Image 1 (tube, rainbow, N blue to C red):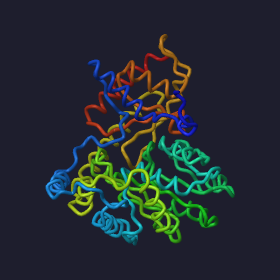
Image 2: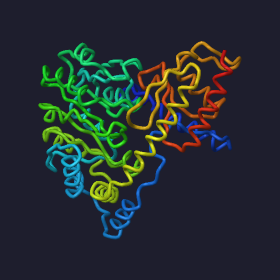
Image 3: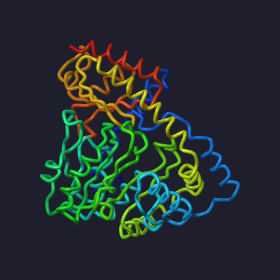
Length: 397
């Protein structure tokens, strides 16, 4: 018997992980592939964080932790939210999980009933719609193109709301576009949401510290929104700790309690040693965070400048994260005699096979006219990748 559940059959595989795997397979064959598909910093975890993890092992932090995480870590997150975001929470309003990805999924699973609608601005992170489908909800996609910097307007939001709307997922800074909602733009969206008090905002802020506008803005900071917003964040991007798998939610206590109940039945608390490392990340020096941010900003400037020189690419200037999301529909319908480009997924595969540069097609992000390019790599790799891309695209007629 080989039949999987209908629940699994309804899900799509992760396009970002699939492209990364194909890139690694070519590398294993000895091909020099430049990987611009990965969604993680290329830096190492700072030494003071690694030291805390080693100390945790020596101190025998090797047993089950409380489901929502150690009190010390949750209190460190409370202090971070107060210091950096001017938001007041208690430890009972924090729940830690195995990465921000689980934190998002936990929140969706405890809020969404079959048939409930969840508004998801597009372009979106590939897993959002799949998580909603897993909860038997209905993703409602609201598209914002490059001409509006990939950000939805209050009018678009209001037009998407129905009596079945349960939640809005808002990612800023954005994966895959790098777009950042300003305080004014968030206030505009909040003014719409205030008319519909039962809608919960899931604010994915995992790229909070990788922004180039000077200060992160959270919709939870808008008057009247904190008690109906679930902030999702973690240590993976800011502290180069993707493999440590620590994320958290901060939100209304009734939602946090529900998440703890759910998590207690299927994963329990996250890794004990990783929690102590995350605690050190939040309570220790933030100098490495700023050093990495500056490096990403320099790379952003580099890849934007060079991508604008690629014929047929339409490029905006992302204000956060470490992604460029150029519009590439100019090449649809073109061929080199062997490969025909029908959409951005075809283009991404063409660039991998011909230019040996791994990008991710935009279809799975809800933006089939674009490709995602991660600049979490060296300046040299960025320059060489764009050079290869130019050459490969020149062969398409």
